[in-house]
Structures are given as structure tokens and as C-alpha cells.
Length: 111
Length: 115
Image (tube, rainbow over all chains, first blue to last red; front, side):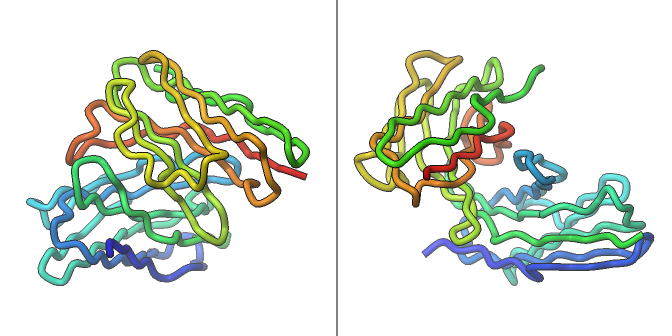
């Protein structure tokens, strides 16, 4: 069935270092891949997304890469700051409306 | 825009009681989603509405759960009777079209505790 695997489940980095979160999806029909950041007590907020016709997208310190052949996509955060600490979810959209979410990565940025 | 609005933010109730969660989607969005988030199962889609019509309710756990969308600016998720295993955070999300590549915007959630 449709599945998105996300790794690692927890990630601790020193402030200023980079963080990388990786996701693998199963349905080759997936064409849209959003990333959400969820802070404690809040709903998931979109931070960046990528469509299947693009291999990489960057927005300031955040970038996402997509390898459709391998069915992998990754989130890269550079120059991490304490406010980047949160749970990050990847998702893949295999159909018209449904998102398949990864299990989340808890990122801790140590000051 | 105010974003997706949910109420209440927290709900504590006793087993067997009826619980009603409320959602106001972003104005102009015609697709609405109800999700449940737990540590064990992550984010689960419960039901999807498009133009106020339920399109996919395959994620609704059982008959105790029901959802309505009487108009484009309001939706409810009702649990009757509630059980302790229903304790979770319930999110409402909306999107413009509900189509491929359409971003879903989440509300702040309702944390439900059933004693």
C-alpha cells in the first residue's frame, strides 16, 4: 500500500550545523511533496514543498531535493538555530487530494 | 487571513459523553480535511470534504464518529459516545481545490482527553 518512511526519528545538532531528514515513498504516482514543521502545541505548518518536475528547491536556509527514480526526497536545513527545534513531517501526494505522511522527525538544535 | 480556526483548543470529557469539535476553514478554500494525531499512529486522515460534500470517509474509525459540513465556512466532527482511546489531537485542514499539488493548511488542533 501507500507508505512514506522517514528517518531519523530524532536528530540533535549543534547550533550552526546542518540537519538532513530523509523520506522514501512507495507510490510512483506521487507528484507533490510538502514538508511541515510542527511546534509544540501547534498544528503542522508548511515550510517548503516540491513538485515532481523539479529536482531541488531552496528557500533561504531550507532546501528540498527530490530523486523520483529512487523515490527519495530530503529536507536540508543549514545554519540551524534554536527556533528550528520542532517535529518535521514529510508527505507525499499519490492521488488528487490524499497526503501520506511520514512518521516525523524530532529535531533538537543545541545552543 | 486568520487561517484555519478550530474550537475548542482543549476538551476534557468523561467516557460516554458526546464531543463536538468545530472548524472554520480558510475563506475561499473548497476542500476540508479532518485528521487525528496520536503517538502510535501519527497523522491519520479521517474524512475529506469537497464543496461541502463528504468524498472520502474511509478513515473514520467507527460509527461513533460523524462529520458534517453544512456550509463552506463551518464543519463539525462529533464523537458519540466518546471512549478513552479517542484521546488524541484532532486537526482540521483546508485547501483551495483539493487537487494535485494543492497545499493543505492546518489549524491549531483540538486536544481531546477522554477520562
